Image (cartoon, rainbow over all chains, first blue to last red; front, side):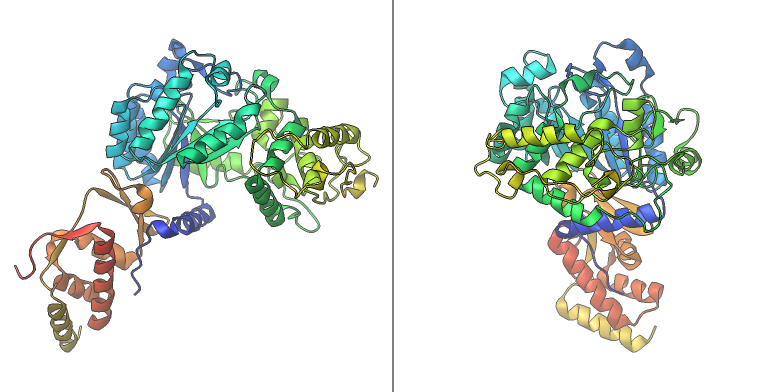
Length: 425
Length: 116
């Protein structure tokens, strides 16, 4: 009869263990709830932002009482983790009412915000009703870069103020950024800034089209070689990629492949709910949604989302047999947004994945008619990217203190060849 | 439940001086049952989630609900023994360890002076 309370020191184990069990039983462990698409910033890369004054968007948002009803249903279904995101969560004046209701239900809540609407009063409130985690997106290290990206004068100072308001109150803050053409030169400085503050920093360079399928964010997306260069400059990131690849690459079942369209945790361990109450696999996937205004969470989860999640592939593509899939961001949502087809491989992601594998000197087993494997029609493009990577290898974009000697591609002209025998090696 | 065992438990608990102490939960917590596990989450106050998320098995959850400021440790030991059909000495050992752990973590506190 051991009675073992589990506290902070084993939180990671607790979380992993519970997620595994919940996923095995198809319990919705987590839900991402988009509070509003409205946002005071006008970031060019954003996949879903709308102006603060968009009255149609505002009118369409779930009411506070609708949010509370959905929270009741999520709690009943066994959900424990909730992520509130936007747009900007504080764009709604009643967000803290919704948040407090969620806290009282016993959810572990993470807040994604740009921070620009956080006041001392909000920060004080968060001390009393402490979130599990708060993540502020920092768009640049200098005011000029930050505001070139956000398009709003004064937003940099408001963001900085929020960071200090939260840190002064010892709230659990993480900083993160996107790496795009506008701010790529300041990602390293942002990391240093976060280090000096003693908070975790992470960044993501993989931009998606807008959820209305506008491709405008892709105009500021980095080139594949730029994305991989950023990987290579960060020892921690490289170590994580290597660990990830060792664990997951090449896990194709012998003699076959999975026929499931979705291979992520969406619809199995969690879901997304948009500002108007549409429940879907994830925040990027909007082709199929269940209207929580017309039904309840249990029906949506048990019936609708189960069916979406159980969808099978309709054809074999190069992604089907790809064994470096973990190095890639390809998923049905990306296929929908970039190609209008959940199964159509996204060329950009394929390019990045092959270049990443190439730079890390990972083998690329045969996976069908792949343009980026040796002999493929885009192999020359891949080699050009590798050449760009080599050419800029000595530059320190990330401004880390030591260069990374782990990657011969940065120091040698010789280009290693991938291992894709089906492509004519 | 063997009577001798209960007497021994009572004597032992008396010996360490918390027999009549009634513990109460400090602050607001929500008890959730997730995939068959009982998870206790702090709701408000200065305690961060990471410092105070507790996962209990069914015995722990049973005891947690008895930290109501009204039930003494002695009564909890007896209730555990009865509820889970375990020897009183086992109930006593585990209950005291559980109380000690949660008291050290600062999430329960005595609601009355011992012996009252």
